[in-house]
Length: 239
Image (tube, rainbow, N blue to C red):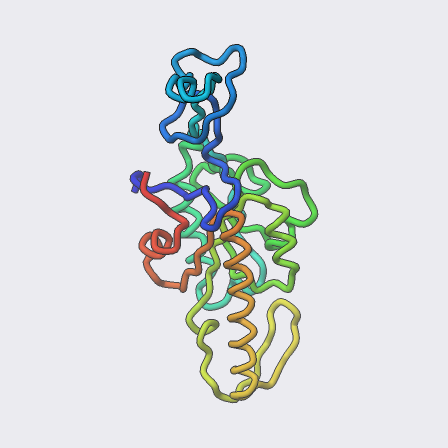
C-alpha cells in the first residue's frame, strides 16, 4: 500500500500544495527567471545567456512535505445504509497512507490509528479557521449547506463522498420517507423519485467540479473496493 499517496495537485488547473517553484533544486523544470545576486552559478542557463546576453536562473518544482487534516462526517445521515463504518475504513486507509507525511484528525490532533467522527458534520468547517495544508473531507455530502462556500474556505481539499446504492438509485415506488437530518416525513411516488434523482445529479456535479478545482474528488458506493475507485477517480496516485 505504501506505493500510493493522496494526490494534492488539483484535478483541474489550480495552485497545488506538494510542489512549489524554487531556484535550482528539484527534478521538474518550472521556468527561467532573471538572475539575482546569490543564485548558485551552476543553475545559470548559459545557453540563454549566449542568445540574449542576459543571465537567467533555471527554476524547478521542489517537492515539499504535505500535511493532511481528516474530517470524518458524523452527522445523522451517515448512520444509514452502512455509510459510517465504510467511511471510517476510508479514513483509516487514507490516513495510514499519509501518516509519514503528516496526518491529523479534525480537532483531535495527530492520527495514531484511531478516529472519531465529527458529530456536527461538515458544517463545523464554517465556524473555525481553515487548517494548514489539505483537508480530506469524508462525507455523504447530504447536509443542507452552502457547499461551494464551504469547499472554497478550505482552499485545498480532497472530497470523498460516500453514498449507498439505495441513495443513488432508489426504487420508483410509493413510500413514506423520514429525513433524519430535518425530522420531516414525506410521501413519495415515481414523480418524486425522478425529481430527487435529477436534483442529486446536479448536486453531485457541483460538488465534483468545485472539489476538483481545489484538489480532488471521488464518489464511493458503500461496499465497493476502495483503492481501485480512489485511483480511478484521481484521489490516489502512485508515488
